[in-house]
Image (cartoon, rainbow, N blue to C red; front, top):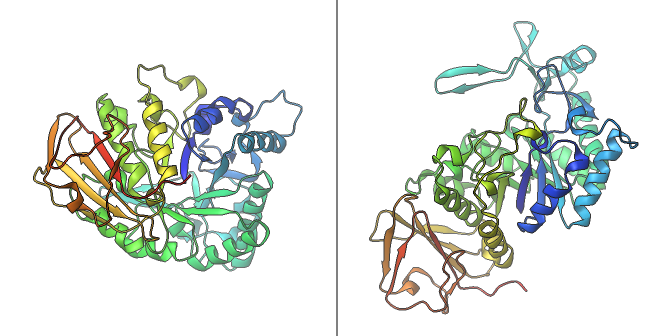
Length: 424
């Protein structure tokens, strides 16, 4: 899955999304993911949903002759005509605190000292409470069946709008048996429906338990890897046979990488290259290709926050997405290992297809600021497949790979070599 995250508050009314959808196609993405589009509560946050069966007015043309639902359906049909599949956020772990559901179905919610509870998390030793949200009680509700039926009707409503993919927000907060039943019931009517679990911040055990509920993919934490520690590869090994994972260089929950990297374009290229090739799937938010620095805010972002920059990574991203689409080894979470290298500033990863589709070698400069030398007496000692190795790097690809091999990697530069035949 190659997913372009179209952030709805930045894109504006759905009738204006065509240029963004066309850009996603041009960049060789095959899915477009949009954050929640339903009516938010008093806080205005996209993730604080007040009415699950109404569309956010900020995403509608008030003068259109079509109904709100039909405006969304028209956008989805346009995406499909362009060859894209549409994915939307599915938020069933909580709702807005001012939702009518609290009055109509008080038994659906977690209680704290007699009051409907707000969800919370621990961040850097501090308790963070989302006071605009009410926590659904999927585990202990006296009306679990009614709550399940509500969630099922929400997914059916979104399927009726044309969506066939669902990013399941904080999926680990919903019991696995609820997901199993929900996914089974939806796939009975929409067998092509795809469910992706958002599991960031939970333990490996929670991630495995969630993935085991039947999800098509999960999100991984590769964005935070320093290219040296063992934790990411250990997480990868623990979950890769249960569900493929999806990497991202930044998301709507993180600062913009261009801001974090102090304007270093090479850092953006490095992180997208790694995200695209590390795991079976990749997701990139809109604006990354242009080096946007303003964060995506679930309340305050508006279309006039679109930035004018001197950066355009479109060709670089398009090439990597094409490589991912062409070589099956990059479309799965196959066996992966770090190969010893003389230069500690260079990462060498060997990725193998678990389905017999060959191998790939990734040589990455960990340093996005400085050049680093890489030397190998024989590149073929890094792989187990028979020659030839083919260089499919986005920058300065080589027609011939000599022995010994020497190359001075630019800041953050990656070399990509494959041994497998490409998909026609």
